[in-house]
Amino acid sequence: MFGARTAGGAPAVDQPVGVARRRRRGGGTAARGFANGVGLLARIVQLVVIVVVLIIVVGMLLVVLKANPTNSIVSDVHSWARSLAGPFDHIQLPQRAHS
Image 1 (cartoon, helix red, strand yellow):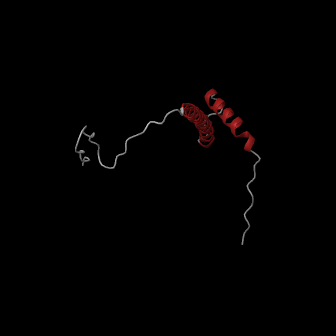
Image 2 (tube, one colour):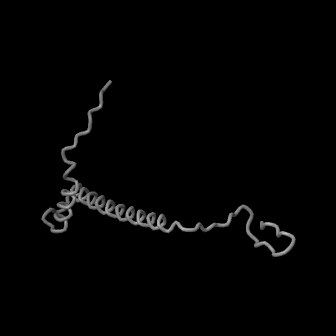
Image 3 (cartoon, helix red, strand yellow):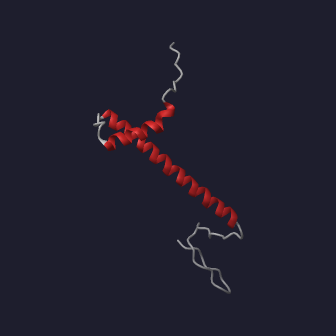
């Protein structure tokens, strides 16, 4: 389970066989900072996309379930969903050729 000790001077540190030690590289702080910034930006974009999709899906559910449109919450969510999905209203998918 553990590697063998070397004979001689200082004893080697017991370490599981097949597990490499992690080496620390010198420098690289700018690259690491850039990667952290890109990761943070990706998480923010992902959060915004999730919120937008949730608003659109809730708006669709309110229409499908025929929620009372005079309710202020229902009308607000429906208007938000309509404004987010509005630019895609007139998109037409290409017709498939029938054989």
